[in-house]
Structure formats: structure tokens, C-alpha cells
Image (cartoon, rainbow, N blue to C red; front, side, top):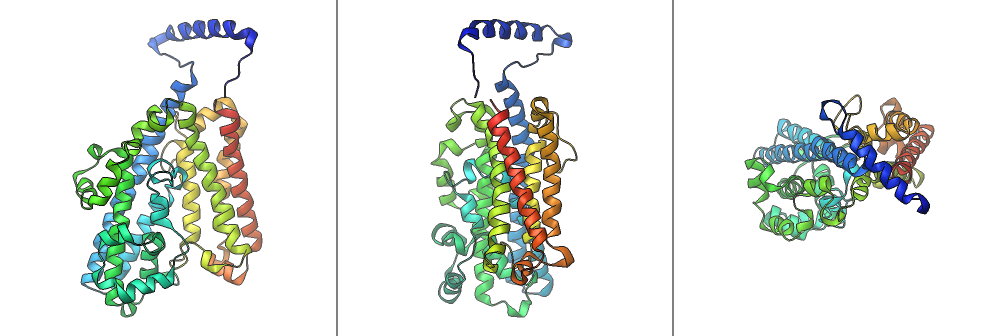
Length: 392
């Protein structure tokens, strides 16, 4: 927060006015912002338009591909079709994991809790079995989205139905009930992915096919229409309106806080807890053996958020990174190095071609696990420094 010395208040105001006038008189009529709010607004626009909305767009589009692949699998069960469905799941999963540095706004638990609905873990296998045994024949996407618990739908239920031991299941193992359950759960997943995109971008700003899918389920439409604070959320964050009540400090803090939160979650919850507790069933995405990829993609989401664009080798001019570099270049350099270090150390957990499930089960590669946990904690601490010492 800004701090002012009482006896220098007037002098500070005069100096600020003079600086503002001077900035307006620079060559080429370029106005240099003297208020952090203006700088934050520019950073937020880049962050939203180049990172958040494109990521949700890619996820929604990938979910539709997944839906098509799973419908084809149900209608024509074959080795080729289950391989295509598994590949479609992998792609959609990547974009979800690359969104986890911004699990606030519409996807957060204080709004629609899309995160909880789409990514709850561990699964309730007994409940999944109950659905398969009793309800699968009459199960629809609408029922799955509205009535089923989060632990029996979402990414991990569809993963469970498609994969075993890191590979697509043998097609002869899949039952008619499982294929029906898969398509219903996929519909529910599709609506969650599309809801996240439409809530952020605004229904008028998405393609016609996305609008059509969004309007397939009246319950999804009613949910968004009943929550004005989370409609067109991109505009609200960029302009610090809605729940931000004009505070650009609160709005810009979402970037650093979101990055710190997921860094801490990856290290402490996703990696350390299952390993220390020898709890293989707590290993996320272990049916597909996609866990270490998930965790690296979480850190990539941090990099995208910090750099102001997707899959960049260097930060954009209007990124949070560029702003931090003007205030504390050492911290900016440190964060960029720690992001890359964190990704590398998570990858190293899989030394010798091991999945994280195998690492936890066999209690091996402890030094790599420890190094990754420390790297994630340090990365989270670095982003906390932005919120506490840089943003004001």
C-alpha cells in the first residue's frame, strides 16, 4: 500500500503534478503514466487478452474435440477410436493445467467453482461403480452436470474411463455402460470448459459454435445469467470493476497471488503430500500417467501469466515481469530463473522413465522429489514478494 509522510503531503502532490505535466510534453506526444493504476491497467489488458482468454478458448475448443472423439468411440468402439479419444483428453487436459495460475473469478470457489467441478481429486471409485451399475443407461450430460458429485465427473472420471497404466484401455475391456457414462461425463466437462470461456470473454465475444454449446444446457445459462459479477469478467478485471470496486491494486494482485497459490499447491499438495504419505491414490492423473506433465504445465501457466503471453521465450513489454524489473530487477531475474528451475526439477522426478505414480509407489527418486518441492516453495515465496513489496 502507498505510504505518505504527513508533513510532505502537499509537496508530494505538487511534485506529482509537475511530473505529470512534464510527461505530457515529451516528444511525439507520448504520455508517460505517473500513476501505478494506469500501468496496472495496461498490464491487466495484456494478461487478460493474451493469456487468460486465449487459454480458456483453447480449452473450450479442445473439449469439443474430446466430445466428438468420445461420441465416435461410443458409436464405434475400436482401438483406433479409443486412442483418438485418449489423445483428445490429453490435449484438453494440457490447456486446463495451463489455466491454473488464474483460478479466480468465474472458476473460483467463490463463484461457479468450475475448478472443483472439473478437477476434483481423488475420485470416488465406489460411487462411479454405483453409477455404472445402476444409472448409466439413463444418464445424460444434463443429469451428470446438475446432479452428480464432482468426484464422479470431470477430467479425472473421463481419464479413469479411458486409461489404464498410462495407456488407452484395451477396447474389449470397455462396457456399454462405461461408454454411455463417458459421453455423459464428457458433456458435463464440455459445459464447464465453455462456461469458463464464456464467463471470461462474454457471450458476444465467442464464436457461434461456442455460443451454441453454451446454450445447450439451460442450467449453465441460468448460472451465469444469475451472477452479474462474473459475466464478461475479462472487462471487470481489466477495469477493476465489479468486486474489485475500482482497486487496481486488488486486480493486479490476482496475477501474483494466483501464481503463488499454484506454485505452493504443486509443491506441497500435488508432489510432497502423496510422496511423504505414500498415498498413491492421491497422485493426480495417475491413470494416464500424466501427473508430471500436469505439474509442469501448472508452472508454465505461471510463466505465461508473468510474461504476459503464451509460450514466450521472453516477457512482453507490458507484462508483470517488465513492471517488476523496473522496481526490483534482481527479483524479476530471480523469478524467471526459478520458473525454469521449477519445471526442470519437476521433470527430473521422472528420471529413468518413471511416472509419478511409480515414484510414489516404489518410494524412489526422493532427492528429485525434495528438490522439486523446495523449488516450488521458493517460486511461491518470490511471487508473494511481488504482492507484499512491489504492488502498491
